[in-house]
Length: 153
Length: 265
Image 1 (cartoon, rainbow over the protein chains, first blue to last red):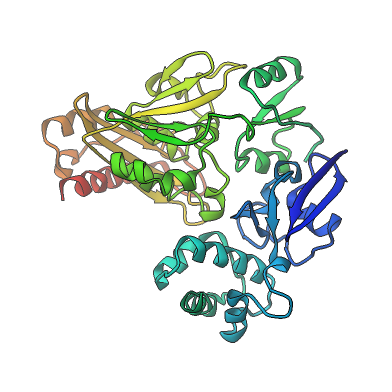
Image 2: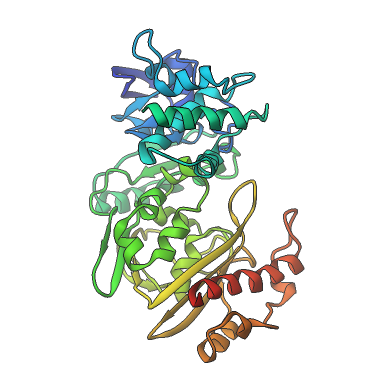
C-alpha cells in the first residue's frame, strides 16, 4: 500500500491504496465521488473521463499513483454551488441524455473540447466525441447541447 | 491486474539502476497500451518504472534539417505543435488521428514505438521519414529499429530519449482506420526528400515495412498511376476478424495512392 495524495475539485485529498488501484476506483471508492462512471473498463467508452492537470483523460486507464501530485477535476467539480456549468446547463436544456450513464464523461470531454476548440462546427464536435459512447444513441442532442454551450461560453 | 511495485525515478540513471535491480520490470510512459494489457493479465511486470518525472525527454524542437520529439511527448502535443505543422505537417496529421482525444492526452511517441504494435501509426512515420531513434546508449536508424510484431532493436536496459525526424521535401500519411479502435487497418506514409522516396506501410503485415517496389516506381514518376499493379504478397499480410489478407493488400495500394495524390494535387 502507498499513500496517494492529489488535489481533487480544489480539495487536497489522500488515501492509502495499492499501486494497481486505477484512478477511477480511487475517485469512486476512496473519495466516494461516484459521478465518474466505469463503463467498458477498457478505455473505449469514455464514461470515466476526468481532467488531470487540465486534460481530459480516461481514468480507467490511469493509475491513481500516476496522478499523485496532480490536479484532478471530476463532474462533481464543475458546477459553481447551485449554478450549473454552462455545458451542464446546455445538456439539461437540450436533453443531451437519455439514461444518463455516459453523461458525466460526455460533459467532461465537452468541457475539454471547448477549451481547445472554442467554436467547433457540428462535424468537429462529432469527431471530437470519438472516445465517448452513448449506447442510447442519443448523440444528436449531445451534439446540439455542446454547440449551444459553445455559443454561451 | 496483478500486484506490482511502482517507481517514479527522477533521472535516466535511476531508471537504468531500477531496470538492473528489479525482477521483471516494465517502463511506463503514457500507459495507453501497457495498462490495458496488464488489466487483461496479459502482462504481469514485477515493477512499473514511470518516466513522467524525468526531465528533458518530452517536448518538440525543430531546426532547418530535423524535427526532434522527446520520447514522453504526448500525441496531442505533436498534433497541435506549430513547429511540426510547419516542418512535417504529415506527422502532425498522423498524431491527431491516433485513438481519440482522450487517449492522445496520455499516449506518448516513445511508448508507441517501444511497443511497436503492428497497427500503430508512429512506426509508419519513423520508417517513412527515415527517423533516428536516440536512446541512452546509441542512435538507431528506423530501418534497423523495427523488427516485426512487438519486436524492436531495443536492449534490456535501453530507454528511448527522443526521435529525430529529418524534414522531407514533402510527405503524406493516409490510413484506413479500424472504425472501433482507430488503429490502422492499413496506413501508408509516403515521403520525398533528397535521399529519395520512402513508402512505409503499417497495419498490413506483422510489423511496419517499406514497399520498395512502390519507392522505385515513385522515384521515376511521382503520380498515383505509377503505383498501378504494385501489390504486396498476400501470404505475408495479417489476417484477422477485421480484414482478410487480400483486403489489406488491396488497401496498401489505395492508401499509398491517396497519399501520393494529396502531394501531387
